[in-house]
Image (cartoon, rainbow, N blue to C red; front, side, top):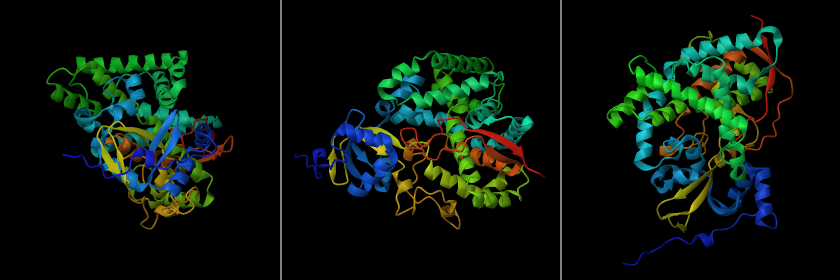
Length: 445
C-alpha cells in the first residue's frame, strides 16, 4: 500500500527572517519576541519557519494553531521540550510528562487543584492578605511588591493547602528559590552556570530540606491533616497501593505549596501597576469596591470592573509567550506534512495581540471585557490549553482578585520609581524581573 502524503514538505514552508542572516534575525527576535511573531503571523499565517536559538524551527502561531495544538495533545512529547523541568524537579514533574504518566499525575493532583479545593481556603487568603498589607504599611517604610506577594502566598499556602511547621524565616527563601528557578529554566547555554551558583544551590537545598521534612511528617502521621496535600496523598496511596513514594510526594508538595506563586504575584502586580497609572480605571474600581464589605469572597465574582482589569492584564502581560514542542507522530497541518520528530515553536499568546480581535492590542483597555466582552476563543493562551492546561490556573485566577481588591480598597500606592512599561514579552512572558518598590498609604475611612 502506498503511503499518500497530502501536504507539502517542511522545506516548502516560508521562512521569516529579519535582517540579512539567521543570526541577525534571532537578535531581532530577542529584542522584541512578541511582535516578531505577531508580524510573522500577519505575513505568513499559521505556519512559517524561523531561526530560533541554534537552528531553524517550524512555528505554529495564531488561533488556528492554538486550536490544533490543544486539541491534538496525543501528538506532542513534553519530556524533550520541557527537559529543564525534569533536570530541576526530577522525573515525576507534571510539566514534562506524557501519556498515561501525565494523566496519572494530574489525577493524583486533582484533590489539590480542582475548583473546589482552590476555593476552599479563599477566606484565609483574604484575611491573610489584609493583615499582611496592614503590617507592611505601618511606619511608611518601602515595600517591595514582587517579593511581598510571593512570600505571602507561600506563607498562607503553608497554613492552608499544605499545612506544615514552616518557620517564618524559611518562607522568603522558599519563595526566592521558586522565583530564581523559573527564570533559569530556559537560559540555553547559560543555564548550567546559573544553576551552579552558590546562592541558587543553597536556596534549592533549603527548599528540598523543608519539603522533605513536611513529607516525612505526613508519612509518619498520615491521618493528622485535612488539607489539599492530604487529598493528594490519599490519591497517590490509592494509585500506588500502599505507602507512597517519598520523592513523588516531595514533587507533589512542591506543586501545591510553591508552584504558581510567582505567576500569581506577577499578575497581581501588573494589575496594580495598570490600575494605579490609569486614573479613570482606578476610580471605577474603587467605586465598585466601595460596595464590597472586604470579607465576602464570593461577592468579588460579581464585580465586573475588577474582573475586566484582571482579564486585560492577562492579555497584555501573559505569563508565557514562547513554548516548544516535539511531535511523536506524523501529521498534517496548514497544508504541510510533518514527520514524527519535528520540533515546533508555539508562541501561544500571539492571539492576545492580533488587531482583528483586540484593536490597538498594546493598549491597556479593560473596556474590552465589560458589557459581555471576553477573551475570544482560541486567542487566550495565558494558561495554555488542552490536556496540558496550567495545573494552577484555578488558584491563580481566584487569589489574584483578592490581592488586587484588598490593596485598592484600603490603600493608595506610591511608586518610588515610575513603573517601566517597556517590557518585552519573551521566553518567560511579561514578568516583572526588577524590584517594584512602593509605599502603602492607608486610605481615609
